[in-house]
Length: 421
Image 1 (cartoon, rainbow, N blue to C red):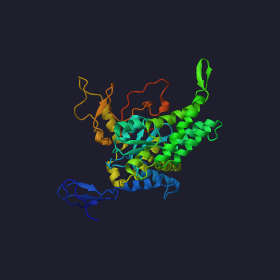
Image 2: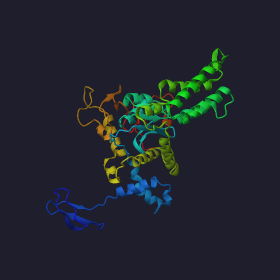
Image 3: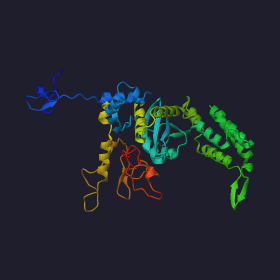
Image 4: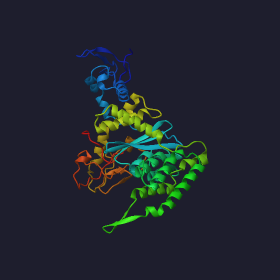
């Protein structure tokens, strides 16, 4: 084994006895610095942790004792796996979110068989989707299942990108309105029209579908206008069919139902009409969480983050991930600096040494804005309509309580989750 180098002068160190524990001590003849050689096993422990996370084995089935495994790897839960922007442009990007109970959602972008980026938020609002899209160059087409706020975020961040609504989710939504065995003739016809969406492949079949749907609307227009008066209010008799018609009319009006057909005419080749590629990812993520059920919410979130990191196009080696990925302590320190009150008498912010280095959050946005309370936040990170109280969990918020202005970060949280989760 080669002698270690001195950290002070870079010279070769020599043996200098042993410590009380029996560890070899090394001393530099030039600088006089003394040290012991310590082998960093964190990369090996991180690899063992990730192999367990992606497997179906429980900790009791691993070699060695269960407590030894957790003692060696429990520190991994303090790391935040962050997606690094590559700048690669893709023709099609699939977008979807996986919910952790009803408290948090991880937004995921998928293209060409690997994860592009992921973002943690409290709801699928416009600002949350914008924060995810800001890390990815605008594609030619984005496929989604109709998440709230996604279309508006794409119009702001991905200007010129076309949106394709997943036709499988469209048909499923119509089936929820009509049921699988509709009793009304109008419902049965609409169900048949919705089921044909999965078989559309070219402009001719899309034109026939639009013609049949238009004929259905004309035929049953008077039928859908039937209503009764109840306490002076107009109650439509066939409200569920009216909702189904309204949802289809909106998609046809926005032009997001057959975007894939238009892309085939413009660029040729096959373009996806469903979000099945990302739905399979969600199924694998849920299987991982089911195999390791019982984890706290914050651990489940970070488990999804690690899964996304390992399924990126070029995941970092364990040693590199340990070097660049932030920890809970680092993030808490950044937020503590940002929330510290200014010592200046005029109320202006500190000029040096008290601000957040936003590059620490790996956010590509340059411009920030300040809310009325004086807290700084990123102009594309979501401020949730139901933020958590400073006590931690949403269930701790009393009825009618108005939360304080939250601070935001690149993880998408309106307020950083505390360690009680």
